[in-house]
Length: 85
Ligand code: V3L
Image (cartoon, rainbow, N blue to C red; front, side, top):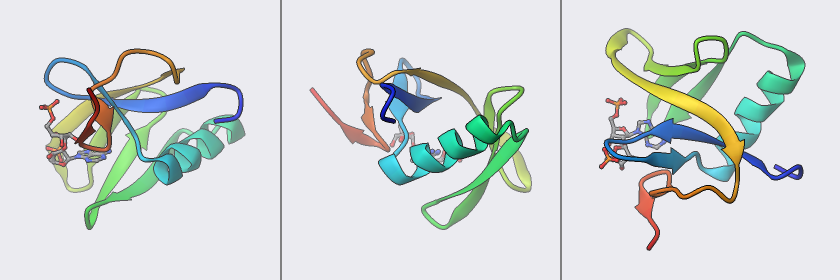
């Protein structure tokens, strides 16, 4: 985002940045004070719980990951599954 923050979801040993569009959607919900945000990832609906800071696939609660809002400059695995070195 323009203030230097991004949204991340947890991988096995680090954090992945959300793709820009999804990160913007989550940020918008966050700034509005909404409790959750619905996103679409590869054809699946996920709920981002902005209070618990969890991402969960709709109707499949075992598919759950932590999420966080942090500076765009932190070490990360990549963006939306695309690795960066
Ligand atoms: N954006 C992109 N892909 C996602 C997202 C998202 N917000 N959420 C889940 N997936 P689940 P390591 C991740 C993908 O939670 O080695 C990473 O992007 C998810 O991709 O069970 O563990 C990597 O591509 C997974 O492939 O619904 O750090 C990959 O995992 C699939 O949806 C491996 O990352 C099922 O996730």
